[in-house]
Image (cartoon, rainbow, N blue to C red):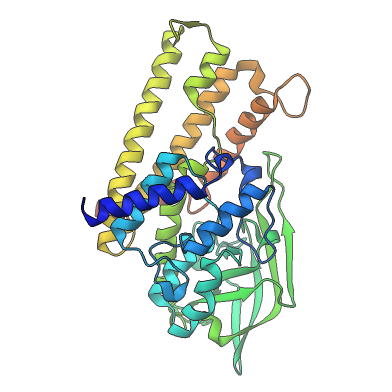
Length: 395
């Protein structure tokens, strides 16, 4: 038995002993545990699983131990992923800081910034949100106007952000701000970290058609931010943001087990259509389910391969846009198919004539539309793929 085989057995034994049985099932949106300064748990098992993984450093298994990580190498971290998937372990927490901001800090941050921000992130002690889009800077993000003006050892930030997910529940936000109004629009942008408890910040939730809202508007009225919270160079924020968005798109694409809709097409179809010899009797529906299952499996296998290649080559590249695009379009296709299977039972909103599962599927169908916008619209992703992946001319 080689070293990796020994490590795999150790990981397997540890997970078997430490992951509670109730944490080995898919988590609904309501059951997800989010990192936070004021973290809450719905059960003792959630708390135990969170604390045990945190204490192992396995929230960030391949980060250096000096920053709160597990110190595992790439192959060991992959083994941990595989063994958690084999056992059906839930993610012990949802932490956008780890998935997006953390890798950027490891690449662009100073040693002091890493020591300040990474350990609390690795322990799930801070909930981060992202302040990029503005009312007049969405797809054309570089048109952003929220300004940061130097004043001694600080920046004074004024402006607003929109479509900021979970801003009303977050402890801190990483923002793109304009620090040079006279520079070309891509070159006058900087990347700042801002505490959400800072005076002058107001958050307003945005209602969604699905009936659930995690989007917010965030208003900044002369918010003072220490210059030590600048990541990268002054006016060099666009390069930092591009790198972060690569991680963001990879994270969105890799959230299959935390997806917006946990219902399987085949299982749902068998509940609403006649079944003969354990097969869906309707041939058209059966073919649609089989085609989707094959596409989903091919996507997951390709994603796994490319993510492994990315780890060896220094992180996700432009190809991450392919997976962000395909995963969100796949989710839209899935929820549309589920709604078609439900028929008139997919028309519910809040009525006793519809089950909780049926209402959940209807809302997931509505929410899937937003997933093809967040993190860069599908149209933007297609442009990135054409220019950066396929190398097609812009003219």
